[in-house]
Length: 400
Ligand code: CTP
Image (cartoon, rainbow, N blue to C red; front, side, top):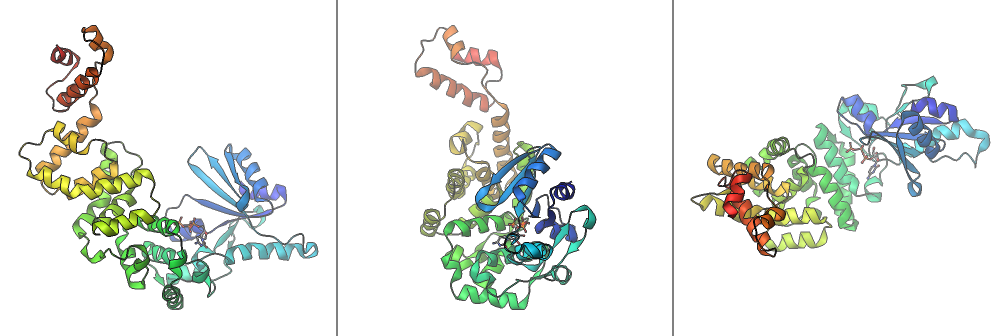
């Protein structure tokens, strides 16, 4: 459809970047990026009309996003074109503008494009040897200054390398190491380093990438005081399955797995480096809360392990209101089946149980309104968590 719309508008449109790369690798990818030789904005608007979606326009970047059904997105960017400067040489210049757009990118494997206009539909465009590098499994930059211009690319190279089981091509690796030695990563803001770290921690198995970061000297710029060799491999390995289990059991759609990994990493640091990290890196409120809870999780777990009788109401006092990621981390620490079951029992009840009576009922029962209401209802809730009070009648009887 994009090709047809472009044709009608007299533009050329290409599908580019990660989507094409992953298509050739048979790796799942649902983010479609289009580059338009023409006005990206206009194409996005027509495309949205045709597909029944909405458009969000980012004027400053010359990009637009077409959103269909709230979850399927197509990014549309305008290729820089020198049309007005060289009107006579239009076809050539238009062609070179896609090329130029692709040349600015990070690695050859990300420079592949597929033509979408009807006359060339499906034609693979490979200006920089991306296909060959996909076959040889190489991460290769396009020009020597690439890492100097954008040092985050060093972290991206590592991420792609471990995601696909590729290798950073030797010259590229040398240039990456050069850039690290020239302290280029020190020029990045904490925000950008954090963004890249989060992307790495969002990969299915981030540990190899972290080790590679250490090898190349990148880790020093991220969390110099954390010794990755001390990571508890068993715990680390169980993270994906415990996250998956938790999401299913508690119908939790959005669990930030990266946050569980980050918590596990920060748990390896001492108090001082942890505080330094939190002071520098701009985590949002929820992430900050989770990290702090995870910090306490070790002690909380010990307390739970030492308790003779683990009641839900008691657990509620310890971990009520914890973020999902912190609860997952706590569960990861537990190795004893009995304790695991107790915590899960608590979480199950927490999800299901609600008090059936409220302030209105207390008034009917003849109690004078005041702060005592909250106290009664809170107490009642804890009794219900422990299974002592089961239904509305029992709640009322208990109040009486
Ligand atoms: N890009 C770049 N330099 C960066 C970030 C991105 O050149 N520092 C380019 C890449 O060539 C990439 C494109 O911008 O193809 C889009 O970036 P992004 O969506 O981050 O990359 P994807 O390749 O889609 O990666 P992922 O699969 O992780 O989403």
